[in-house]
Image 1 (cartoon, rainbow, N blue to C red):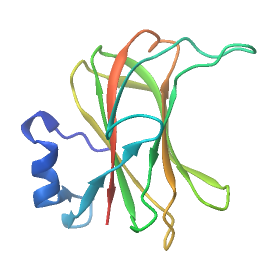
Image 2 (image 1 turned 180 degrees about the vertical axis):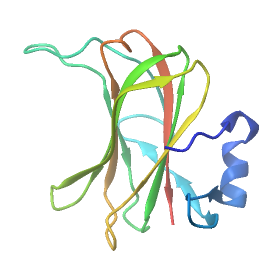
Image 3 (image 1 turned 45 degrees about the vertical axis):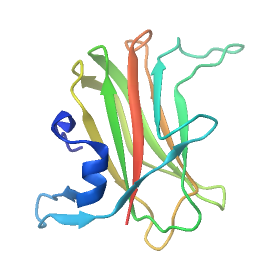
Image 4 (image 1 turned 30 degrees about the horizontal axis):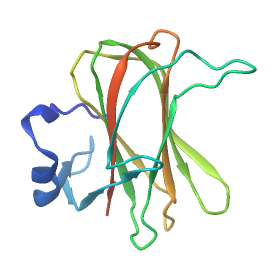
Length: 156
């Protein structure tokens, strides 16, 4: 997980210059990134207040899907996550592929997030394949009632 103080950068500025990512042993690489649209919503960002966990009859709002354009091949996805209330979240990033398979390249229970402190999570797609959706699952018992904003970038 990479933590970057996104308050210093604007999304258009990041997209215009390319996002710089650095691995621990590799040099920084500029990437061309595109915001992904929220499935069933408007725009490229979602704001949610975490509902109680689901039980036999009730559901929850912990899952949000972002649509990956079929005409672009992305090799990396960057989830931007900001909590309006500092708390502990359970966070999963799932990549859904057209053959009905799902990869979970990021799964953390009890991720401590400080209020208004942006978190950036980078995950890689399978080599040579692009998923059709990125699913972000944010929830947890301790997170109930807390509000967050999230968006996803697809990067080439």
